[in-house]
View 1 (cartoon, rainbow, N blue to C red):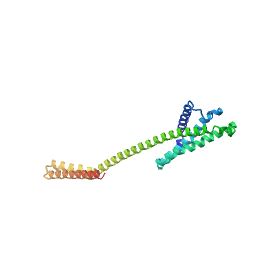
View 2 (view 1 turned 30 degrees about the vertical axis):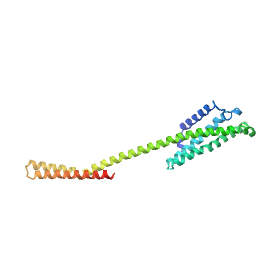
View 3 (view 1 turned 135 degrees about the vertical axis):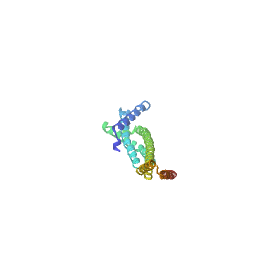
View 4 (view 1 turned 90 degrees about the vertical axis):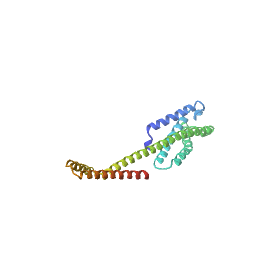
Length: 222
């Protein structure tokens, strides 16, 4: 999981969530605006995104190790909501402590905390779903490529076995020796030359027929 927490992913995630908060600021007042610190929502969003990124990568690692994606992925997305509420609450309490604000004042704006936590959870959950769908598609592609590679390897092994089989049935050294012997017989005009030639041809035909029969059996079994 920690290998997946690369700087590129962290920076990309943080850039997206900051942009999301910036766009939202044009329509709704950000969390912390009432106390002059709209950075509170940026901080809550950044912290939530960082924690949920780690959760998503951990869930992805579990899937890589054999756990069902249909179980892990939806559960991780659902956990995004309580985790977001916790991280947003921690961030808000940290601001209260630094700014020395009384909790009575904060209670008057408690609805803003709830609304902001919901928005952050929805945005982060949407990003998690996109990442998980992409990883699922990548795994499907990897399985297809692995199956195709295995098929090619099996075909290569089949060709090699056929060649080995043909070589076993027809020994090249014996074949050349027989041809040389038949050539000598024809040179001497021996009466046995035609018979030996016919015998060699018959042997080659039998070897070829056995090879074809074995190929047919392998094709039928596959």
